[in-house]
Amino acid sequence: QVQLVESGGGLVQAGGSLRLSCLASARTFSSKAMGWFRQAPGKEREFVATINWSGSTYYATSVKGRFTISRDNAKNTVYLQMNSLTPEDTAIYYCAADRSPFGTGQAAGYEYWGQGTQVTVSS
Image (cartoon, rainbow, N blue to C red; front, top):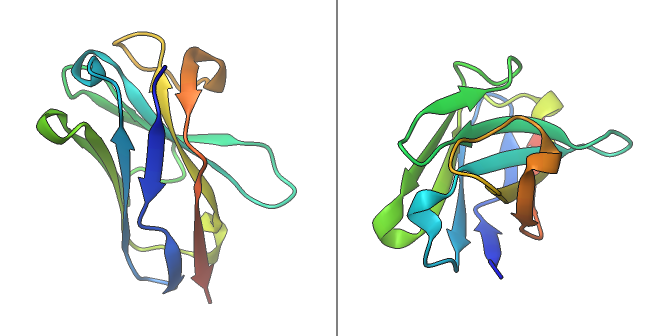
């Protein structure tokens, strides 16, 4: 069983930045791909970014160039640095642990999920 705890969400003005953190309980954290997803009110959960076991990253088109995913295996933590935020980024952001080391943009590929952290961007 892997527990994931997100933090760092909040209210920010358009153009601002936030950094989300996700602390994982797994001793095998370094061998897992990790991902961030988000869900806005009335919308389906959507992929944001993933980082695999070797540090390779992949982003949704909507956040590429603005968001950066990274990991610190010594701290069992994955981060999402979000810059140039817009009101369209408002959502609950979820951290997820992949079933494999490789990473995917599909939610079905992730085995464990955090409870989510709210990000609200005001115009």
